[in-house]
Length: 212
Length: 216
Image (tube, rainbow over all chains, first blue to last red; front, top):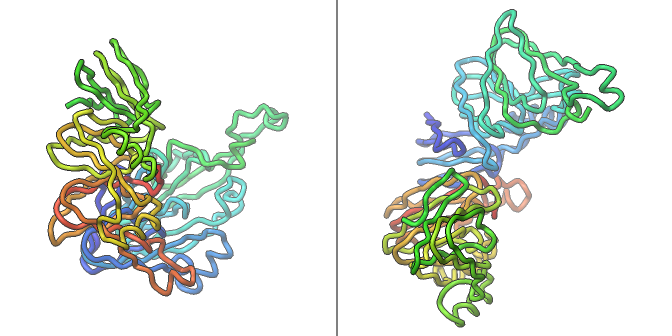
């Protein structure tokens, strides 16, 4: 059973006892003990997953780490959030997924047109099963709860991940001012409704909506 | 203890007459009191031969000598600063990661080939760290820079630590380091896991690892 723990807020330490984790290619910074690294072609979802990932652009370079000891992972000094999954599904941008336990299944899911307009792409990565996943964010992420009757709107560039039973829809805040170039820089938002948690980072990726 | 942490990206140093602090040129952020900053043409200590040594070795980060009476703040490039106290042992660090150190420390340049022979030379080339590294020994404090903070990992006999060369910051103690490669046929056909080369540190001591794979 792989043990995930944080060493500071930016380094993930995983204790392995002969078992396996999947991690972003090249994200190991140090290890003790014996470790083997093997690249998994096409995100490690098998042949079908590989084709899907190629087609959808949710490409992920993933390696399989197997061994005895402690392995340390970090990615460009981003903050790391540990997410424990007990059968639920985590939706996360593939850029933000650092490491998952081997017991978790990964795949791609279609987010529809709203993903495209927000610059996050049409597809997102889906992680499901039982185990730990490590999600990166630029700056410490805040976890916002969405409940019935309490929808949440998020800047697409600040969205990192979500869990639970959520529907996402793209909302446009663009009015006539946006068209004449006087927009507030918040022309697009993603609205989440339902029940669940949304991870938001204190930093914004470049998105189409942010430019407008 | 010459350095006091202000936050994780800035340190301040108490300068008293007769005690110098050497720092990377241009890394002063502010000071109080009567303090002078002298560019150090030698790039460090140890006379002209050392200077030539450093020039040849390309470990000649421009340094300045800070003297006088007062408090000086140091920081550079928004990088995290980590203060390491040396108590008679030796710290090995890349010259461009050195932010400041006390004048009581002996600075010298070490040829990587001394450790591991030919493999040491290959190591420096492959990892982009060069053939030489800076060595600080004695009693005093050193402030080193790292991207994204530092994790200290102890090294003990029989328990070597493997580090990604890009995430390696510094090490201290009786440690031998060698390049271990996990090159396989997968790397040859471009399907590598991105972890083809690792530094293997064994012996007794401590290694400092940063939370990022960005070299300074």
